[in-house]
Each structure stands twice: as C-alpha cells, then as structure tokens.
Image (tube, rainbow, N blue to C red; front, side, top):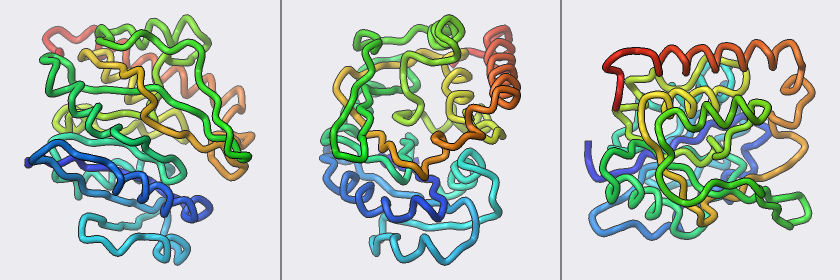
Length: 249
C-alpha cells in the first residue's frame, strides 16, 4: 500500500449526472506532501447511462456489475483500491475544501484511531444548506459510543456514515459494507465503532445532496417491517463484534 487515499463512489444511473460535481470537489482537494488519491467509481448495474459522466483522468477507474445496491457496489470497488485508506464519496455528494487532508490528519496524528467522520451539511435543491444540531465535540469517539448513541436516538448515529474515512486493512477485515438493501453504511460504522476508536472533525467535510431520486428518499427506505429487520441485524452484528475477546483494532 502506498501513500494513497482510495475514494470509493457507488453510482446508479439516476445519480450519474452529479458525478462531475463530485469530481470537481475531489480535484480541488489539497493533499499533504507525498499523498495523492485515486477515484474508484462502481456502477450498481450495467447501463450506458453512467459512462458519459466519468472523467477522463488517469486517477479515475470505472467498473460495472450486477445490481446489488450501494453496499455491494462499494465492496466490489474495493478490488481496485490500492490506498492505505479508503474514503467514501457518494455520487451525488461533494467534499468540502480540505476534507481529505483533515481526515488524513485525524488518523496519522492520533495513534489508536482507525476511522474518521466529519460534520455534514444537507444541500437542498434550492442551494441552501442545513446542519445537524447534535454533532458531538471534535475529538475521539470511544469504542462502542456510536452504538450506544444510535440505540438511544431511534437508530440515528451522532456521526454520518457518508463521511467515513477508514483504514483499508480494517475495512477488509470487517468484510466491507453489509449486504443490506439500505443502512449498509450505518452497519459498517457501528461495526467499526465496536472494535476500534474513531474521530469526529467539527469542520464540515461533506455536502449531502437532497434530491427526489436519492435512495433514502424512496418509500421503501422507511418501510417499517424492512427497517426493523435492518436495524436488528445491524445491532446484532455490532454487539457480537464488541463481545469477541481479543477483537480490538
């Protein structure tokens, strides 16, 4: 592994039009000396709709595969990841200036921290932004603290999984993203918290686009029966990992 950050983006056809904005936010990142990034785009499906939006840049690779939702696409993208760290960037979101450097600093400057998240602003269709009023203080997130908060706040974590920055070896050890129709990123976040310490950066690191075609805006995402099942398996996995003797990172 090299001094490289592998930025992984899952995309489906309706969201392909937002890729140029995501790319712009990536190329504007100022990386620390000796560091660079690669962008791994993986389509959830095999259409002709995404390719026209993929930048012509040697740092960018594009792959396709059978539909399996975002978690499957991201995990398949891991096969092309060469970096020491992995950063999530959804196709319809944008990094803020300095986000990657702050993520890197969180892990390289704080021994024992294996993953990082940051503040998020929702980007509304009219261009305005809305923040979350319950962000934790900047600093270390103790092992297990995300699960504790998530259970006490109706399955809502205090940090956003769409901002995740993580050691690649730990991500692989946990098997990538969960095989769920949704909440696969929350499942990974809780699993990471169960076995290792994380970090929260108070500076805004991501603009999280709100638009009618996003997966989390669909009725199926809040179907009560499915939601209960997703939350049950997410919690059970995190609890089991936390209970394993010697499984600490």
